[in-house]
Length: 513
Image (cartoon, rainbow, N blue to C red; front, side):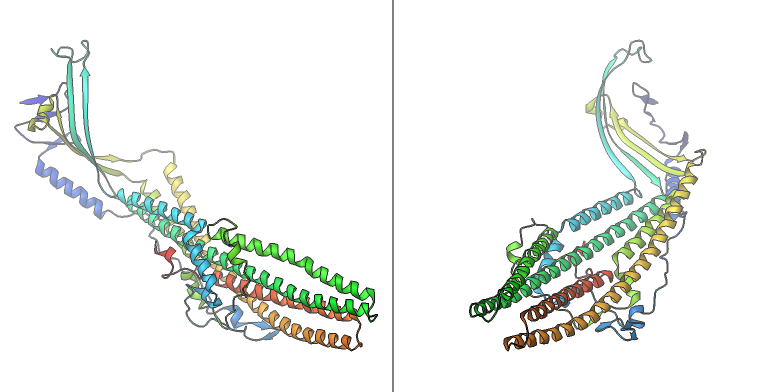
C-alpha cells in the first residue's frame, strides 16, 4: 500500500523499508555498509600535489664584519662586539639602563595602532582557518516550514475535491563532501600557514614599533643634550661679554671686541629654537607611537634627562639564529608553505568530487499529524562531479599556483640574504661609529685644553679676543659633533638589534596571541 502527498513528492512503502541511491533500491544493511565504505575512502584517500618541506638555505659560519674587520686599515676586532654564542634579545632595550624607555616601550606594545591593526589581521586569518577546517566535516541544517497552497482547477491536481490545503514540514538536511584527494586538507593547511604568516607579520610590526620608539627617545635626549651644551656655552659667553664691556668702559678693550662677543652670543642663541623644535617633534612622534595625541607627553618628556647609556659589550649571537629570530624570514617561509599547499588544491580540481547528502523530515497536511510515523520522509545518496571540459581552465590555474609557489620560494631566499646583509651593514656602521667616537673624544679633549690656554693667555694680555673666540667656537663645534656621534651610536645599536630580529619572544605579550 502506497501513501502520497498531493504533489506525489514523498513515496513510502510501509511493508518494506528501502533506501534510494541514484535510483537503486537497496536494503538498509547494504546502505550502511556502502556508507561505511565511502567514509573509509574519504579518510584514506591520497593527497595529490606537492608535500611541503622547509627549504634549506646556506648560512655563514660567523659574521664577516667580526671575522675580517678593518680598523684604521689594520686588522682588528670592533670594540665590545661579540658573536660567538647564542643570545636572548627579547628585551634588548634593557642594555640602555633607562627605566623610562622601558616604560614607553611597554605602553607602545599595548596601544600602538599599527600593532592593533596587525592583531586584527591575525584574528581575521585565524577565523578563516576555522572556516577551512569546517569544510572537512559534515554540515547539518535544521528547517521548518509552513505553506498554504491553492491548486489550479485546470492543473494536474484539478481533479481533487479540495484544491486548498496546508503543508507543514520539520526536518534536517545533511551534506558532506568527502575529501578524497586532499583538496580540503591542502586548503586547511594553506590557511594554517597563512595564520602563521600573519603572526610573524605581527611580530615584525612589534620589532619595528619598539625600534621606532627607542630611536625617537634617543634622539629626543640627544637634542636635549645639544640644547644644554649650547646653553652652557651661552652662560660662559655671557660672562665674557660682561667682562669685555667692563674692560671697554675701563679703556682696556675696543668696541670691536664687545661686538664680536655679542655676535657670538647671538649666534648661539639662534641655535636654540631649531633644536627645541626637534625636541618637540620627537615628543610628538613618541606620543603618536604610543597611540596618544601628539601633545600628550610634552610636559613629561620635556624635562631634560641624559642620553641612555651604551653597553660596554654587545652580543649579536650566531648567524644561524637569524633564520629563527627574524620575523620577516619566518613570515616568508610561512607564505611559501601556503603557496605550496595551494598547488595541491589546484591539482585536486582535476579529479572527481564526491558528496553525500541526506534528508530526514516530517511532512503533513494536518499539523496535528506532523509527528506521526506516516509523516516521515527521508533520503540518502552520493553524487559525483567530474570535470570533463573546461577549455584548460583547471590546468592553467595549476600553472598559476605553481608559479606563485616559485615566487614565494624566491622571496624567501631573498629575505634571508637581505637579513644577513642588513646585519653585516649595521655591524660595519656601528664599528665605524665607535672608531669615530674615539677620535672625536680625543679631539674634544685637545680643543678643551687649547680653549683654556687661549683664555688664560688672553687674560694675561698675550692673546687677542678673536683667537679666544675662535678657539671656543671650534671647541663647541667639536663637542656638538661628539654628542651627535653618541646619538648616532645609540640609534645604530637600535638598528642592529632590529636587524637581528630582537624584541619578540616568549616574554612578549603580543606574541602570546
